[in-house]
Length: 155
Length: 196
Image (cartoon, rainbow over all chains, first blue to last red; front, top):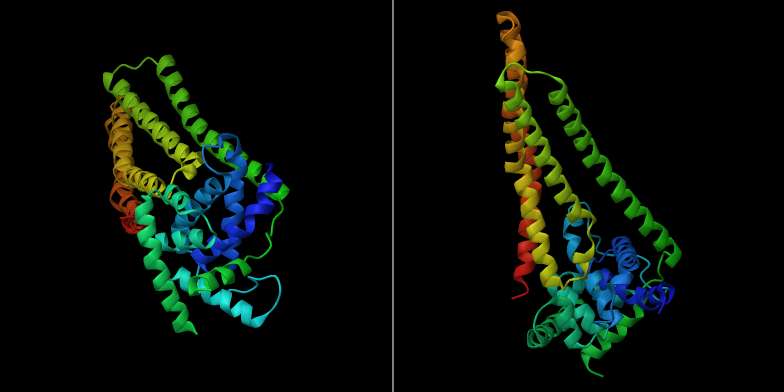
């Protein structure tokens, strides 16, 4: 798989992960771009020891965690704009609410639930985050409950 | 369809088109690497050139007092320590391999890096300053002793300048740098604790 293919296949998912983490479209785009810069720089060191998606999500989630350093410079906006390609107000509102609610969770929870929503297998989430699979399972169960409750409050 | 599946569908509807093309990413990536290498090389080479010039001075100058050699030795030691710490710090900055670690390991590495930076910005600066001041003080002795008036004036001026740096600038620089780093370290520790 060449870089162009990797970029077009994974950039929407990486953007969603970053967006749910920071809830700011501009910062999420920057983080997505930084992720692919690192992917490009490290592509030679990728040795198929993990699925390429797992490898890229690991880089992206570390970039998100590193954004702690940048958070002090940015003001988080509650209502990000232009997060969907087509303009359907209802759909956009639902997605906005989802990103907002995820971004209010604890940092590690944001990463875990975003990966779960991206359909990343739980065994791979465990290798991305660096915790045991059983711990991932327990955490996902709790985060799902928390998120569903938050979404209900929103409605 | 359960509620989480509905959320999953909403999730998949999100995601704007990437604002950059793969070619733009590649160009930027190469640009960043170049910038990092230039910055690393220029900083370390400036210190290295200073080191070499001082060595040339000591080789070509026949000092009468051993204090002059001690002074130069301490100054060289201060510069050598600065070169080592800068190289170490730049390795942290330029190395992107840590990004390939899992989140837990990455946060541990981030904490290690921040603790190192806190050490450099607090104790490191003080050690560098003590070595450099003592070195300059000893180096000056040979020239200052040639005349009492010149000696008193030279030591007073240099002493005042060093004192101003030690008592006024140094604590402020240390506070400014370490306050920011300590706040970041606390944040990273807080996120790390979520792994348990």
